[in-house]
Image (cartoon, rainbow over all chains, first blue to last red; front, top):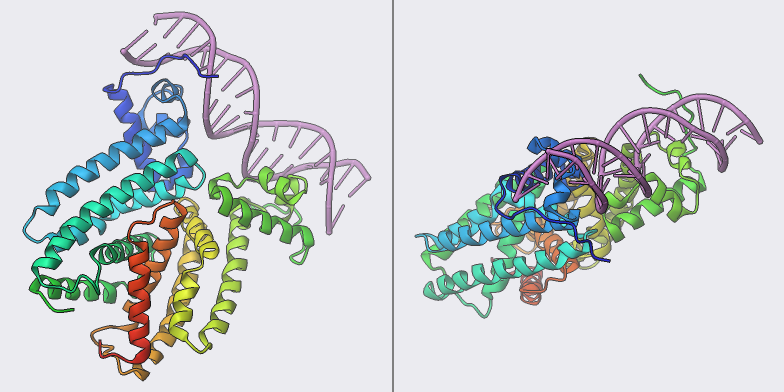
Length: 196
Length: 196
DNA sequence: GTCTATACTTCGATAGAC
DNA sequence: GTCTATCGAAGTATAGAC
């Protein structure tokens, strides 16, 4: 049975504060540390307010994810029209704060089923958008896109940056400097228009 | 103040059952779904038994992680002496079940500080062990290890397989087939002894 | 439109009986 | 070596006051 309880306005200041608090707790302590009480405490509001603005915790997480994903899409659009699109694509995935948050949402998706499809949907959007730009650059540089399909190169780039950020958050470092140097070198080669 | 409460034997059947249950819940529902009551229910034991065998939940997670990591190290040792070490390294990281569990532990580490250093320690161990074998193979094949440091290649391979498995668990597929084909091709090239 | 009081559930953990 | 009884804290969510 669906509840008829009233729900707070979307442009409320408190609502935004609750979403901000949610993000902060996720990054600092992990998604499992997010609870209505902790969020309210962080936002300096009363716990039940969480349920006034978001009917369930799923609704809260969904709203937090969508807000962040939309910001990311806008950011990506801006950045891809910059002078060095390849480096821009790499730098985009190499941002620790946003990657950490993304990985928390992915972990969250494992036991919040309603989150899963939304994450997958946006992740596909990001990949396609980035791949589009990458394909253009690769074609311009005369790189063999049969041997190196842009979508595969894009997937590899994303994988590397995400895992590097993830490992660094654990305090790992083995192989990181070498990997970053390797990627930087390859990006420079691609940028100059090597044949492989 | 340290509790003097008694603790169960390490070779107890119930203790092993509790660790099994912990793993199952982590994979199926995420680490946040693991609670002493849920574990006991899954293992068909009484809830307080969890605290009899593990003083705290941190102790439980630590024991679960160590047990799995040691199994992984043994598995890795066996696999690396096989006929096709490159493919063995790749296949090792490309195993969905173990990767899913690993990613849950990583997510868990974000708010269970005592887990973090243990995960990092084992992850470094794995990387060094795999890199050692990779370096030997690359040297044999005459691959330029200055331009492609084995530890960087190893980091990249691990990144790709982990992210592919992770994304697939979300229901994503964009770029995966192309990426797997690209990796397979490169591994074959490396295996045959290309110059780059 | 916003917040408070509160019900109900589940959690981790301990002491002590068997 | 295992289980019962139980405490205090924290969780989600709702009804209703302001």
